[in-house]
Length: 228
Length: 233
Image (cartoon, rainbow over all chains, first blue to last red; front, side, top):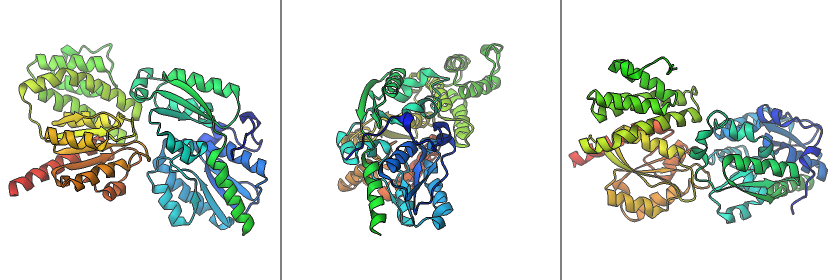
């Protein structure tokens, strides 16, 4: 079941702001027995689920969200985080999908005996991996709450569109629409997402996803630990 | 790198102009590249010479600096766009003058995938290196590759994918080649951001190419080997 989360602005106070999550990530805090190693782009959602469900036995550390733009660096970064924290925690879970690692993250997690999130990326597990695959939607460009807020840092600037707007057609000419997968109900964020679609010259669609398979996976991991 | 306000291209001698074209490609200056191409042609350069010495030479520098992390995707795209401008002038002339081709490649982005930036770069660099390129565009099912490769008498089938979800389709194409007994007729090159060497081997490709420059070098090596085998046979 998908939760109806609080608005983005009501996220837990202990979480660093988006810019820190983008560039530096988030160090683990708490005294939990489980460590979640996640993408900084999921930090707010994971913290919200922890708070909603009282999963205090799960601590969270996040790798810099900007790795989203450098998937070739994700697997090694996860390995290093696991090595850094393995002695301190009974169990570690990885809150990444494949995220463009071409199966390398999955292979590394299997080798380290760790579970990770299902599906190719966050767009998939927010919607629900099965439902997302069923759409077979090849010309949609996806944004989540985090990516809507951080659009310039993750899309506009790295693609050089701030300096060379004429490149837009080369990047987005084959896309038809921007799909905003909304984790929260936030009119301002929706309006911002719509503006991003206009900047990219794409049609706009908003889909309320909540937390999808992210919540289901975390619930399953929390329950496993309770049974242990 | 260049200061186009002070440099009059037509006043540069050939060597200076080629150096200037390297700079202009690096800076993604399409109009200047087109002007320089026309100047060299006007001085009696063969289209093939302009292509290889000026455009490909310049793009090789761009490719190297991209690989070394000095240039990034936007700059490479601007350079590619400038080269495309030059190629548009040269292509019809190359066809007329019967410039040498070293092989033919059918290239496309696989089914379910609409990303074509990498594929376009590879196609352009392959053309620059003397290959004839048949571009299938995006979202290609297996028959697009195989029917076109057969019809065109291609040496190379090139497949591109940007998504983890679409890259497995490359294996579908290769497996279909095997089923039809035509796998050895073609050199299969694969590329795209989520791919790696292991994946290339696992699906039975001849090579994984990490970027356009590597694709060109790999294609040249494999075509040479193929020709050597043909001669030996």
